[in-house]
Length: 241
Length: 59
Image 1 (cartoon, one colour):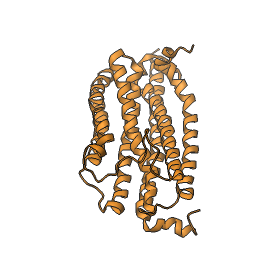
Image 2: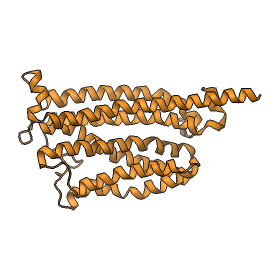
Image 3: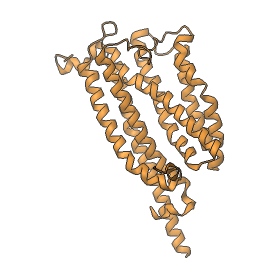
Image 4: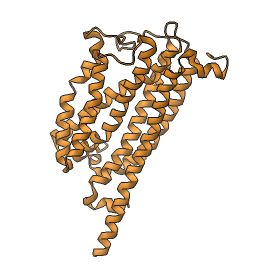
């Protein structure tokens, strides 16, 4: 059996992350190219929204990733808090900026989709407001970590913030059911078949995979930078420079 | 095929500013972020190099 604990040390994970990263980047490019092709050239025009619906191919993947990355980030932060493993905190720190980016993109593309379909860029309804709070949670996590000099203490403080913020994720996800909102309900769920044309759904899922692979690739790259920054005093990093 | 011509494609049925405004910002972000991360790693490596030189100087 593979000894997974070996890779919980930053020194062992650094070269492994470097070897994995290009594969995830290549997968992101392939899925992205396929998703854009299907999204623009195969998926038909929506009979209600016309071509404006094509924003879905970036809006839904960005929104999903913003929530999913938060859960993974909080998971790593929690592991670090529980077991005091160095790499866990670095994983959480590596994920935060990419999660914030996707939260921003979710809000941005949502605003540009809201204007032609709802007549407004922004409303203070449950779905939009809770996604904005998610964006601020990411920024708060990053600001808190940046404000504390000792990285181990920064990890602990950030972990508490990240774990408390997890409560916001189900609020975002179920907001369209719990409250009256302008935002439409889920078009895709695990329990029923998607309420959209198969080619539209295919384009969206391809873009979800693209964003997913992109997130892994860029987070691994950032993790390597963070490892170098934090392990400066440990000796082994000196041989890399 | 949805589009009769390239102009039709870029017009996006009259929704061009919204559709391209979304895709342009997404594209910008996923291009800039990897470059920013690469710059951060290079900066960290330079720091290490400087520390190495300093350590050799003391030895």
